[in-house]
Length: 251
Image 1 (spheres, one colour):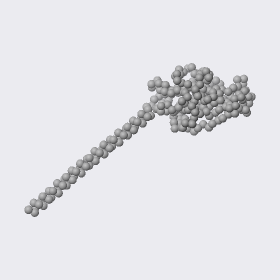
Image 2 (cartoon, helix red, strand yellow; image 1 turned 120 degrees about the horizontal axis):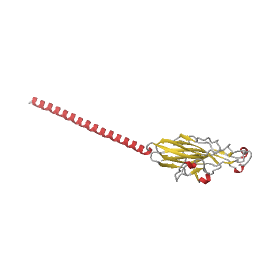
Image 3 (spheres, helix red, strand yellow; image 1 turned 180 degrees about the vertical axis):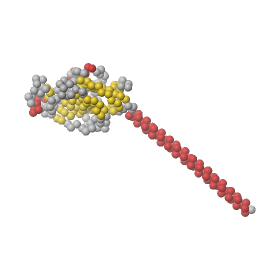
Image 4 (tube, one colour; image 1 turned 90 degrees about the vertical axis):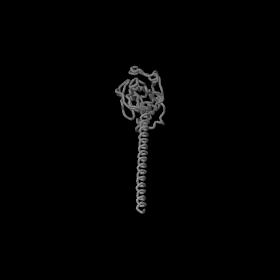
């Protein structure tokens, strides 16, 4: 009888041990399954974040910017120089158009430095000649997505502008024999990294739109078929504003 009780007790212990092992295996399996689902959820979230980022930045495309300037310009995209006027600003009557291409994804920032010809800081041109005068400036540009043929941006009053050279401030000095001695001027330091994407241009003013008649477009302007929305822009004064910085983010 004692042997039967002992055998029964031993059998119970073995059964309990097996049940415990099975419970442990089930818990381990459940834990592994939960970890797998968590990992899958994490991957799915990462993929979604990546897709959202792709939707924000857009796919890379090739763009073309066409520009006409009186007298000279340089074009930057996201801080990189993509092209500048092939005709030196010192060339008399240096009016011409240029076309540059670049590859990027949206949104991207376009920055343009535009200059009207001046012989000295006086802002006067043709000093000592019969046609000594204050010059006038102006610029127009349009950007086309070459993949779709769509014009995605044009110059207009939505561009931010900063005039960094103004002269003469006293316009009555225009015909003076020594304008360097009598003409007053204002030069503003060009901001560091003003062509970069992250530059804050919130304190700049809106560019001023001008007509073709007011600017006196010529030599190269008519070589480009301008979009109906493209406008000639400059500072608030075509003659006194000599060097101007322009920025626009294209999205």
